[in-house]
Length: 550
RNA sequence: GGCCCCAUCGUCUAGUCAGGUCCAGGACACCAGGUUUUCAUCCUGGUAACGGGGGUUCGAAUCCCCCUGGGGUCACCA
Image (cartoon, rainbow, N blue to C red; front, side, top):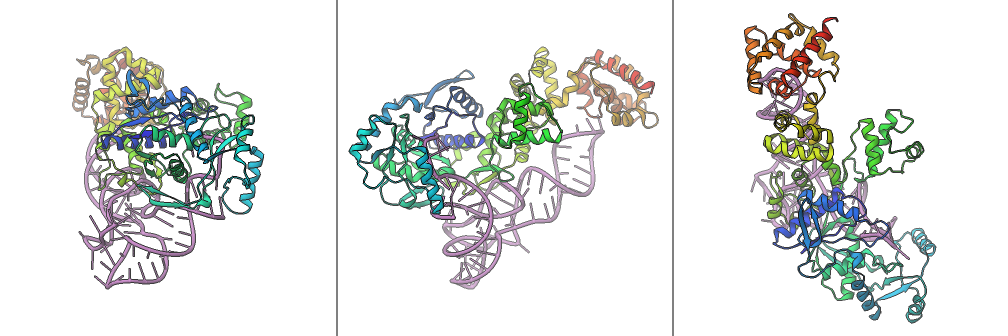
């Protein structure tokens, strides 16, 4: 029994996705159950929208939960509560926690505390000055009965009375780790608003839900002795723990939303912009944001700014990778490799392989850096070498429906042409979002593009005979070519080049300029077939017109 | 700063637990050639690492200690 327990305060971070993936894989490998629990005890920051987003991201990655909130994602119903261990939103579990609070108070292991934030701040400062950790302890001469009485009318928190002994944590990845009592404090277990803190809720819920294996990030290692102490105090079973290494940017910084603001700010400064390039960001906000290094725009706003400046933002959340056109199976493969590997030289595998081979014994101990270059290489390899044209056409279309409406509309109006576009684009695309670049010329109106100067010089004007002079003759051939399909067109062009004893480049180059305005396009047969014959002839005429005077 | 964790190519890592088969293997990136009508592919080759110092041992990337370096954590956030 494993669980993923996100706090719904934002999008699913790529690191969180890896945690979820490993929990899922561990359960699958063991023939166990994977459970989803929503840790929404921070009522100010939690939202159902965030739950929705996280759940959709998990589903996109192919990580389905056996037990948990019953939610439909893309028509698939997930979750359920066959054992009756729910509800799965911590905010709905108040009665369960209250019973445990009462139990601890009765045992004399929990007590109310009335310290103000100012008092606590002063204690922290004192600890810092004394060069030791801040550790809260029950004051000398504390009168529990009096405090309990006072707590009836006064705002307070409930603290756990930490037993005076060291705690050893048994970790599947790191081994035995012992924490001295001097580092473990009387932590808050119930906030002033009555909600349990994370430490308390996680211990109670894992036990009540029968969780046997907890896999989480190494940032939680220092929390674990607190959880273990709480389990002992409550007489609850302890799950097995496996703490995994963390993921950072290549430069060693944390992968955080802030990176996007940083990138956008740099782009704005490089472009020497003084006013907001995006409608969603008003002038005042823009100036403040630009001046203040720590200030952040919303996800949508940064996106708008970046779009206006045509810069790519670093992907941080699962949603970012999805929007950037990475395939879910590639993301799964890549993040699995950050901290786990099956041994030997194997590195390309799918979720099914993970489900069969995953084990905490092969989780690494050291942190890793997220190298987008390698992710991109995996994605390109998958698209170009492991996918069929049909499969690519479908996935690309699904992507466009969500992230590129104009492209989706174009795809919609002629499915046969879309299949051809996919065939032409697939061998030269690395991500679904860059795929449209290869066939963009076909979407433009016939007179909707300009001519690249270099391409014109080289493809049209240079040499003897020059490309421009070849155009009328190849036009005549194309006028007669039947059927208007890649193979026949290719054959006609080759035949023409041979008959005229011209190198193929001598024909291809001017055609590319005429049809795309550039020196680059997919193979000619496919490129021409993507356009109608009328379109091709019109573009050739326009090109001849445009360059004959010059 | 206290406590805790970690340490193999630029990056992800195999090898470490059971020391010799490792003058350290794979992948991405990079460099050089080649194939290709453009682009993208593809092929061949190459550069590149056991953080430092002490031990233990016939023998250490592998075991021990110290140092150095990196990271986590020290909330009424999770």
